[in-house]
Image (spheres, rainbow, N blue to C red):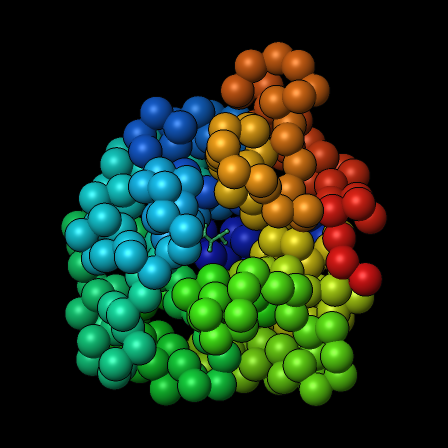
Amino acid sequence: MKPVTVTTVREMKRAHDKIVCLTAYDYSFASLIDRAGVDMVIVGDSLGMVMQGHDSTLPVTMEHMVYHSACVARGISRALLVVDLPFGSYQASPAQALESAGRLMKEGGAHVVKLEGGAPMLDTVRFLVDRGIPVCGHIGLTPQSVHQFGGYRVQGRDDPTAHRIREDARLLEEAGACLLVLEAVPAALGEAVSAALEIPVIGIGAGIGCDGQVLVLQDMLGLYPRPSPKFSRNFMQEGGGIEAAIRAYADAVRSRTFPGPEHSFN
Ligand code: KIV
């Protein structure tokens, strides 16, 4: 099986093939997800919530990310592995980001590192990319800024914020990002951002028009004991086991039946 690379996902965008992505945090689930044909796995700092039971992603450390990333990397033979830089591990300076990203790649097996933020992160993105580190941006609802947003709120609902998100996306691509995660924005904005960029845009609560979709594994399997976001869907309710649910999710993304209007924002 040919491994998925950043070139593969770019070609998938050009061919209008939807990119299927899920989060994972351990070896067993990563193996199952990889076997089910998911194209991209994100070791998200959402592990702070779904694995550790915190209310936010803020307490997650570099040690946690390296540990979970290494576990996931051992389970993957095909999927592209994207790993989050946790809060406080990259915002201080490009040099700090380089040190953290280097650890995620050397010790955690990451293929791509993901960081949150738009314009203020451009120097850091350029610095990492110039040094051979593939970077995935993350804009829209950026969970590490939850206290700045005053909660987990849909972003880009008014013209100035929608404009800023479109501009941040363009600037991140220009700075060298090879992927972009767009979270919790109106579907029309998700479609506009995806159409404007050459790099693949992976949506989570950003509507059907994105180049790919990602969900938090625990949400799509109905394993998280707290309420899941509106944009998620429980694929376990549809019968079959865990692998069947993951395959059903992949089919739904590829056939463009997920996300439906009920999982999207206007
Ligand atoms: O932390 C995370 O799991 C993420 C994905 C949902 C994109 O950032």
